[in-house]
Image 1: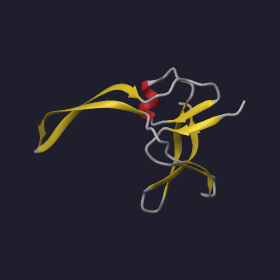
Image 2 (image 1 turned 90 degrees about the vertical axis):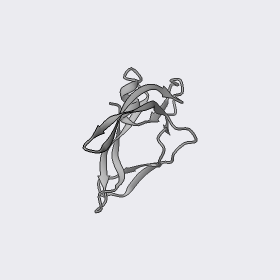
Image 3 (image 1 turned 120 degrees about the vertical axis):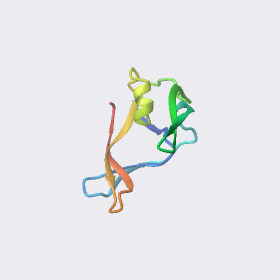
Length: 109
């Protein structure tokens, strides 16, 4: 069976080798799998506006399909703990300025 990995995040995911070279790139797909959020203003602390976020259902999550895996955020993975087809970027690699340039692996969480 052929296995497929689909990137459900809003940006390309770069998998890097130990030497920093690119092993694989998963471009962002047409859709984005995300957790719905609702924000409400709850007041101020030391003059700074404070909000509270309530997390809802996962949006745009395809049905499970044998041999197909989805790269998602840790938030999505946490919202769907029984799904075995979800992968999360791990082993974050940063450049000298601290910007994320890729990861070393995908994790089933």
